[in-house]
Each structure stands twice: as C-alpha cells, then as structure tokens.
Image (tube, rainbow, N blue to C red; front, side, top):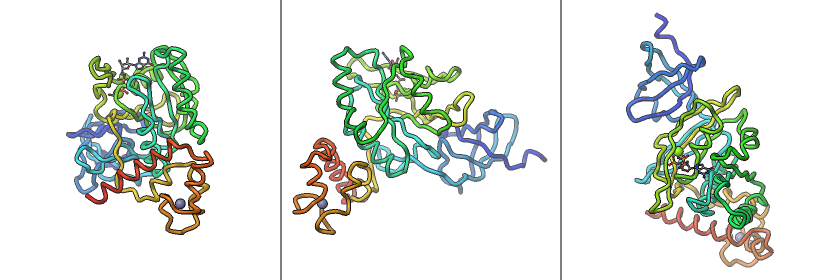
Length: 303
Ligand SMILES: Nc1nc2c(ncn2[C@@H]2O[C@H](COP(=O)(O)OP(=O)(O)OP(=O)(O)O)[C@@H](O)[C@H]2O)c(=O)[nH]1
Ligand SMILES: [Mg+2]
Ligand SMILES: [Zn+2]
C-alpha cells in the first residue's frame, strides 16, 4: 500500500496536539509522531507516512543542521526552531529598544553559528530626532560587523533590502512581542495571513500574539521565514564563560592574549580584553553587557 511509503516533509509548526507537515508539493498534513523520536520542532525535516487525505505519522527527524534554543519559564531548554541560517533580531522604539536583549540574542546566535542581522522596524513612527538617536545606538552593532537594516511594515519601506537578505536562506524573526515580526511577514508575503496583535496602551508592550513558531516558504525562492513568538526577556542557559565571550564577536582578536592563561578579565595586569576596553576597541556598553550576561549564567549554574 502506498500509504506506508516513507515521505520527506518540512515541519511548518509543532502544536501541542499535532504537527503540521508540508510535503514537496506544498500539501499540508496534520501529523502525530512516534514518541521515541523526541521533540519535533518548526523547521525540522522529517520522514513520515501518510495515513489518509490529511494526516500522517512522523517516524524520524533528519539530522538538524542548526538549532536556536532558549529556556522556557520553568528553565527547561526548548528548541525554538531548527535548520536556520540567519536570525533577524527585530527591534523597534515601541516596545523600547533594549541592547541587553540584542546582546543575548547575539550570544545565542553566535554560539549556534547562525548569522545575525539587526532589523529596526516601525521607522514610520519616528521623528527625525528619535530616528537619529536609534541609528546611533545601532551603529555600535554595525561597527562590530553586523548588518543593520531599517524597515516599516506599515509603509512598506526598506523591504527590498530585507527581501534580498532573506532570499535563498532559512531565516527566523525573533524579538520582543509587538515589534512587528508577523506584520513584516504579512507585508512581504502575500497569502501569509500571520496573526498580528496590538500594543497594549497601558504597558507599551506587545500582547504575545504569535504563540507558536510558524514557517512561511519564500515565494518563488528557496528558503523560508520562521515567525516566532515574542519574548519579554531572552534567557540563556548552559553556556560556559568561554561561550559567553565567544558570543561577543569583537572580543575575538583579544581572547587568548592575556598575560595570564587563566585570566578572569576582572582586574588582572596585562589583560588583553581590559586593555581593549580602555583603548576603546571594545565599547564600554558591550563590556558591561558581557559582565551582566556572565553573572546571570554563572548564577544559573550555581542553582
Ligand atoms: N506604525 C507601525 N506599526 C507597526 C509596524 N509593524 C507592526 N506594527 C504594529 O505593531 C503591532 C504589533 O505587530 P505584530 O506584527 O503583531 O508584532 P509581533 O512582533 O509579531 O508580536 P508577537 O507576535 O507578540 O511577538 C500591530 O499593531 C502592528 O500593526 C510598522 O512598521 N509601523
Ligand atoms: Mg507575531
Ligand atoms: Zn583577561
């Protein structure tokens, strides 16, 4: 019977009660999975067997090329999505730009070998003064070597350069709730119908409209965009001190060049990193951010 045949497919979304799988002809199937194969996540390439017109059973997960993960509210590590190349860290002015959050995403992306891109959305809302302030703050990241792009989902501004970066890659949009991740996807892709939410008048924050990561194929292109649920904060776990330092790309030329091999980069003489901060090769702000992230992962480890 042809129904027993092993097929390949891509996981569009992994819900609590079923997983949505797309085959190569773009048909969607609601699938259950064999328990033994572990957690199936958005972006997985899976082997599955069709059961009837609309459903099937996932029997295996193909090896993942990459994963992006973070701890849930209970501190358990959760994979947000797999097989990604690029992470778009989406920021805005409302909710407020938060460099600490950007830095955490950068540490996660660098440690998963994903290419980060910073995207400032909602530029239609800024007056000149606000825009130049935000540009200046993001210049820090451009100086380190990260691409920074500016868009308005509302006025369809900056979308050409965004689409160029997206094309032929597997991308994920991450960032605070309400920055406009789903809106951008709706503007770029016809037929996407991603649900968009409102910014709470009271808190100025988003209301967590997207609740599950969802994969949208790029039209007439290889590659896709994964829309992910917004976060309030992005926790990191299971990173060593070396991993955290490796998450700060501009530290790289100095790591391993301290006078003492076991240098803690606190106050040691001949510390290459502290010297770089003093000589403004590393920004004070990023250095402080590094210290904060380090303190938080060390505290987690002690618990
Ligand atoms: N003025 C303006 N509003 C925007 C823009 N992009 C999004 N919005 C609005 O911002 C609100 C939140 O947009 P969403 O797309 O739902 O944000 P999100 O990042 O997907 O939020 P979560 O799904 O909760 O993570 C909506 O009211 C959008 O209409 C933009 O470029 N300009
Ligand atoms: Mg959304
Ligand atoms: Zn040092």
